[in-house]
Length: 244
View 1: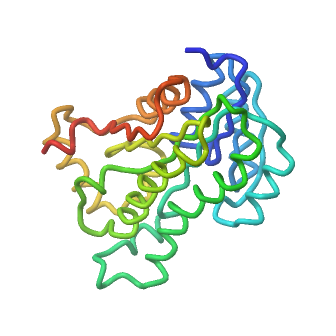
View 2: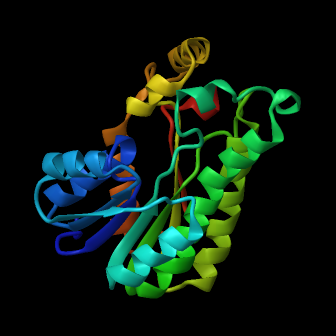
């Protein structure tokens, strides 16, 4: 890959897919900036990543916080924003069928998944090199959904539609989307046991009969950053779940 020397901003880079992406990018010689809420987790992640890494504390769901980050950051090349739909176990347990879900919970899920990425693009894109790229985060649910994920599914569909518009409006900056399937990360521990068991059953029916890893999604993230001909692409990495 040709990412050596590139400056890559990963909001949500202190754990899970974001950390795996940062670690792989640094190993390729990229200069990595990771952002997140917890200073302790950022420091721990920086030690794990090694290489040329900066840490920045912010709340990705707060517009002013995101703007302040990019106002201070200077120029960079690639951007991704990885914020979970449910921030903790208590919130995840309240993801129920649409008619039973509190409106505020649906709004929180949509805000975390959709608006955090919108803020990142709005305030990050003006500081990006013209040869850079943005990788947004979706999921398989716009193509094959499951119960209790209506908010996340709606946000993911909106992100994919937005990316197609941004690929035209922000060109020559490239805009792509990564769409993971069921991935085992530290955040998987936040999923209620009954839902986690359902994940395992669905994964067993896939052509690749297991949950994916954060590192496998990170490979796709870096491919979309590196490939100069890829834009408006939605890259599904889901073990074939959409085929079942």
